[in-house]
Each structure stands twice: as structure tokens, then as C-alpha cells.
Length: 234
Image 1: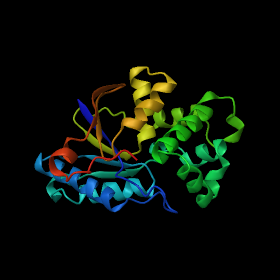
Image 2: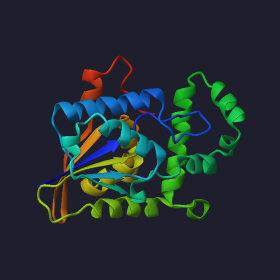
Image 3: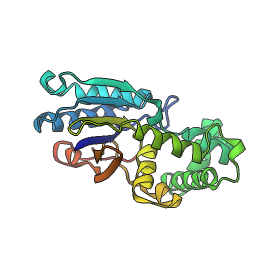
């Protein structure tokens, strides 16, 4: 039976000009995951990176903690099918103020709880995207994104019964794959994505033509090895 570990990237640089970079804490989360795998003598025959900078940074930092023997004969693959949807475009189509960082921050600051206000705004933006009523507004529609994610997973299907794969990707991709495997509704995908921790791991078991969920959103490595505040969700 094959094993597939889906890793959400470490904390990125939300609020900065370039979101697609790990924060200092994001690098630390990736190191902690690597130390966890090194301690468990976990080896991988295949490493898949979703094509975004934060995916590659998480992969490089995590796997640098493993002894070379645990990565012997490992194939590295870049598959953009595991890239996240364009969250800035989704936000922008619902709230054009996102394009003006100062005005957007000022708008959030007017709320008693800015973080909660941002969450409500993003939920509304996601609902707009997923509704299907405004598909012409987006470079990638929700159905297209869903098909892309499922297609990327299906490319991992292999006749090998013992291959172990680690995939560095994003929360939206993982939540969408859970919809595919568990039959979730669209609104449940959105709710699930908010609960996926940075550098948390979701494990799938794989037989030819079949994927089964083993566990979801495990971040024990951050709680056990990390300092207070090591578990983040944005």
C-alpha cells in the first residue's frame, strides 16, 4: 500500500507585498516537521512540490533536516496542479479595495476585531467564487480549480504498492481533495480550509485506482517540538 503525505506550507507572509514567501515562523515550522520525520526515520521515494515559492521553501527546509539515507533515490517533481487558487483575485473581485493596501488596512482597522472582519470578508469572497454566478470574473473558476486538484492527485496513482510520497501544497488544495474523497459540500470545503494549520500533515493511503484518508490535519510535531505560538492557520 502506498502512502501520500499532503503538507500545507509553513506560515507565509500575509500582509507583505509578496505573500508567497515563508515568514520566519514558517521556516521554523518546516524545520520542526523535518525533525519529526528524521526522528521517525521516515523515508520518501517521491517529493512533489506545488510550484509556488512557499511550497518549495517548505520542502527544502523540511527535508534538509533528514539524513541523506532517508532521501536516497528520491524523485523530485514540480506539479502546478497542487498550486493554490489565486486568493488575491478572489478577494479583489469581491472587494476592490484590496488593490489599495493602505485603504484596505484602514477599512479593516475600523472594525473592533480586524482579524474577524477579514475572515468574514474572505468567506464572502469565497462564496462569490464558488457560487458559479460570476465565473466570467475569474481566471480560474471553482470547478476548474477542483478538477485541477483532483487531476494532480490522480497523477500520483501508481502501480507500486510501497511508494511513499510527500506533497508540499496549500490549504485550499487539501480541503478540495477532502471534498473529493469524502463527498463534502462546497461550503464544507471553505470551513475545513480555515482549520488546516500551517505545516500540518494529511495522510492518504493509496492502492492502484483508490485513495483513502488515513488522518487529517496532524500538527503534533508543532505542539511537541515547537514553542508557544508554533501553531498558526494563516
